[in-house]
Amino acid sequence: MERTTDVLADDYLPSASMSLLKLRSSLMAAARQFFLQAGYWEVTTPILSSEMVLDSWSDPFITTDAVTERHLFLQTSPEAHMKRLLAAGSGPIFQFSRGFRKGDFGPRHNPEFTLLEWYFPEGELTDQIQFVENFIRLFFSEATRLRIQTAPRTHDFSRPVSSGRLLPSTAFERLTYSSAFERFLGLAALDVPVVELIAKARQLQLDLPSLNEDDRDGWLNYLLVNAIEPRLGFERPVFLMDYPASQAGLATTRPLYPAGPEVANRFELYIDGVELCNGYHELTDPVELAHRAQTHARLREKAGLPPIKPPQRLMSAMAANFPSATGVSLGFDRLVMLALGTSTIADIMSFAWDRA
Image (cartoon, rainbow, N blue to C red; front, side, top):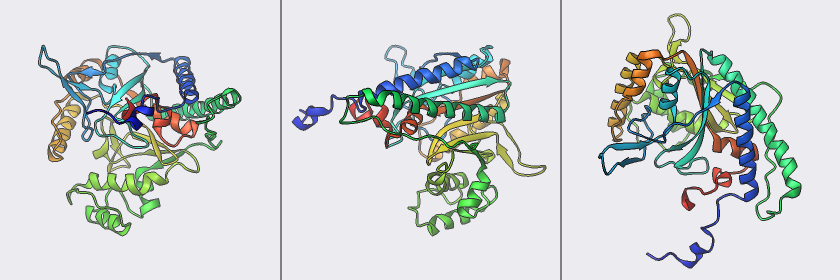
């Protein structure tokens, strides 16, 4: 079908202004320098692979090699390959990687996006949290410096450089998952019955999702996304910590207190209601990894999603020589969006999905 004239008029143009794309480039260089100075080295891992990191809900793009007839996945994260490098003795590593997630559209989502991911062997999660805070502060400060430096010289008056904002000098808040539910919803998240979660969603007059009445994690996540996340990180950035053990992903777990409920050694960072990154004290047990792979497979089957085979090479890496480590996956597009004060990630992408 022939495209209409009005579409042809401007859809060749980039989604972002040249001034913002140049700022993004400078911020990426600053981030790279921060990690190099911290003792990390930069790696590159495959975007296309026959295996994929465990994820219950992400629907990956899949292609088939015409010669070998192998099914290949566009990676949702470089996690599995970077962990295999850790097992091979890489030491601290980071990378800027392309990620792909089917069906992710919106002001903060694009099916193709940029991740900044890093891993530090033998580290503690509390140290990694402080490292993230240091990095975010430097990044926002550099964004402000670049805006001030660039603004007088920009001639892109149709889409000027945004003013963005600075972070407060007070330390980022550390808030447990349970405390967040208590503060905003008056619920004890770690042991509240599912029926009370559903009742709270109705009380808040939310559009009820098509979740089973026994899907506890589904209802917890629904309330988190719709009633808690939009209120996090406005006065100061917030680290949300100690998720339920059932939401550990590939993080280790621990008892919250002696004989208490298990929680995940995991955190997420929020600024202005936007989730920026996900950090783990990494799982090292291949037997537990196999068990979680089975759990993920059941959840995907129940949700009607295509099956994903367990990552056999990652299991082999864990069984061979996988060190205790912490790791963080950060949405770089969202970080640039927040630091430059734009309203959508399309504003800082060269060509968002509708123009790619």
